[in-house]
Length: 305
Figure (cartoon, rainbow, N blue to C red):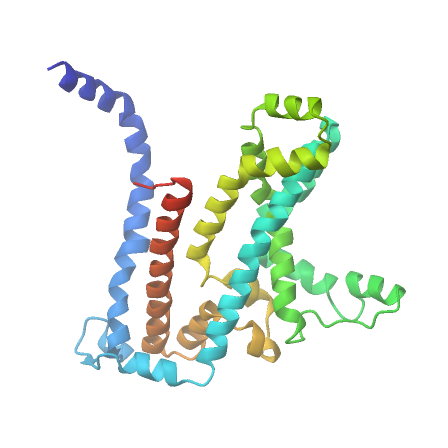
C-alpha cells in the first residue's frame, strides 16, 4: 500500500517531464521510425509512378548485387572507413590534449577566453564554414596558401587534390569540434581528488609526472568510453561537411557512403539502389553500435539500459 502511494506520488511529481517528452517522442516516431517503411523499395524494381506500396515487382537482393558490382562502391566504402576512423582517433586525441593543457592554465580570464574561442566553430553549420574554408584554402589568394608562399611552399589545392582532400576533411572537422569535445574531459578532470596532487608534490613529482600518473589515469575510463562509443560512427564520414566542399575531381578519395547514396537517389533518381546502399550502411552501423555498447559495458561499466 505504502509502495503504491509512493509510486503514485513519484508519477505525479514527474508528470510535467513526461509531458515535455511527448513532442520529441512524436518527432522520433514520425521521422525515425515512420520513414523506415521506405526500405522495402530496396527489394523492388521500383517504378515511382506506381507508388511505394503499389504493384511493384519484387526482385529480392538483386539491387544489392547490382550495388556491389558497381566499380566505385569499393573506393566509396574505403574512403568512408578511412575518413571516419581518422576523425574518430583525432577527435579523441586532440580534445584530451587541449583539455590537459587548458587545465594547466591558472589565469581564469585567459582560460575562459581560450574556451570561448575554440567553442565558437562548433555552433556554426558546415554550410557557413564551407564558404569560409573554400575562400581561406583557395590556391589563388587564400589566406593559408599566402602564408605558405611566404615560407617558400608552393600553393596546395586543399579541396581539389585527391591526396590533400581527405586530410583537409579530417583537420577541418577537428578544428570545428575539438573545443566542444574537450568539455567532457574538462568535466572529468574535476572529479580527480586534489589530495592526490598534494601527495605527489610532497613526493617531489613535477607537473609532467602528475599528468602522467594522476591526471591521465583519472580520465582514462572516460577516454576509453568515448573511443568505444565512437566505433558506432565508423561509417559516418560527415555528409554535411564533405558534400559542401567536394567536387568530382576528388571523388576517388573523398566520396563516402552518404554522398554516394545522395547522388544515386537524388541526382540520378536510382531510388532502389540508393535505398539498398543506405540499408547496407544502416545494417553495418547497427552491428558496430551493438559491439561498441558491449565493449563500453565491459571496459567502463557504461550501460544504456
